[in-house]
Image (cartoon, rainbow, N blue to C red; front, side, top):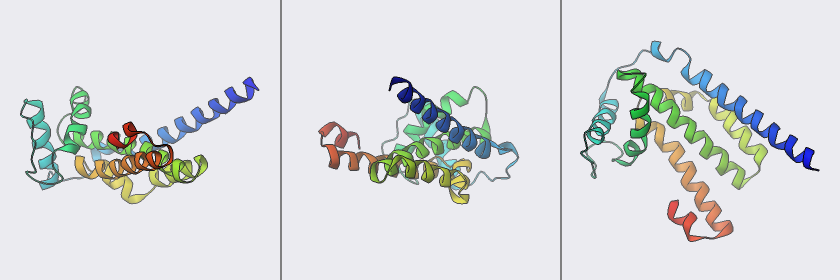
Length: 171
């Protein structure tokens, strides 16, 4: 019985690794060669994250989706800024935000349907044109929104099933 459980855990870990590696390979493939313009929304992302880096903590809507996505994106940008810079930095940061969104999608679909359906949903998302475009664009709030919605819905579904104020408050 113990060996069977351990084998099941190993299979899940291998599947998670394959899915994550596939996403990263597709999302990061020639990311530095993707033509892009530093247009309004990406400039807004840069402004918000720069303000946070300088210790000015924005609390209002200046442009776009408000400050929340940039508070989530800030630590990612801060760590990645040691390796990348400029537009590529924001492209790679949104790939990571897209990966966090995939985890949220998996948990949401697993909660609603089944674990197998969760794996299928994530697999479809990693080869979906629009999910890849948004996760490679460099626009922090656009990459943040699908994952945020998935995580909030997952926590809401979990609260409805199990109760517990902690789950509801985090959601």
